[in-house]
Length: 353
Ligand code: CUA
Image 1 (tube, rainbow, N blue to C red):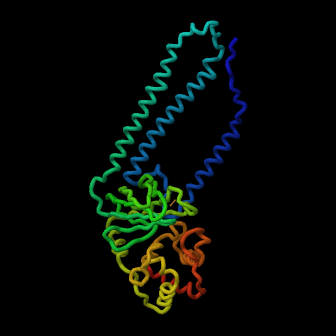
Image 2 (cartoon, rainbow, N blue to C red):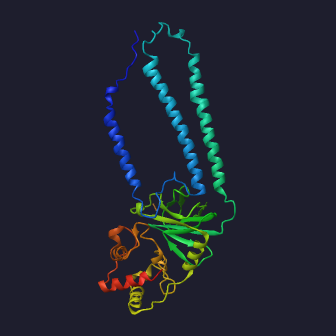
Image 3 (tube, rainbow, N blue to C red):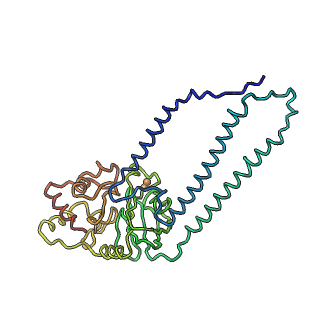
């Protein structure tokens, strides 16, 4: 006599399972809540740009189809395990008598035809999206080179004399071209609310275009493991109304102002007389190295050290004196200065707006 197999539900204790799921959700959601003030949570499911919206739409279609398949398969498993086999019939002695032509339909429909239709739908959506993302509707006026470094982002505006770091300003409502490359290892540029990931490869340029819907500060990050401080390689994409963007460009074009008092002049002397000048540029002075970020408008930036510190006087002092403590392995050496010298240097850097 054939005995149907019965699953005992006593093995899983529902209350314990619910507690576990709740604890997991709380942990995950609390991570989302820690976005810095003024910036949005960088979720690919909260798209604010043309490309990200396309990608999110495909994600939702795949999620819906996957959920549907899961529900159907689970229902069939439950049906076979708990319902159909209760009081099951006996198997005949001669198994060749069983007519299983009906069962072949399950393989044809469930195993071949339905999966093919689902995969074809996903493929068509993906291809049409890739096509839409390949070319902007009009030639972008703003072209920006983004160069990955361990572990910060160099940002150069084509046809402009200036460069900045870790903050990319763009105008909203128009396509902007990004030329992505790397100065050392492979990085990956990812601003989830604006576009999918794109690698930055040394010796090669990958091109994407973005079109941001509304003004805002969007967080981005490096999405390819690139060494010790990969997790601390963040950036801000600052989308502005076209007039505001134009004003920002105008301000960035200006060289650093000449010191107009004794203390600031002293700070500038310290800057130009210390190891700072071997790596950094401040336009309008003799400092014109480009190993580290351009500091001409350092004080106008929101963050320091690739998005990991707010740009405050205290954080800047800590960064200058002992950058290896904050980001071990980065290329900036500690600076050996007296208290007075540090204060004067900070006073000078504060004028670089
Ligand atoms: Cu750069 Cu990870």
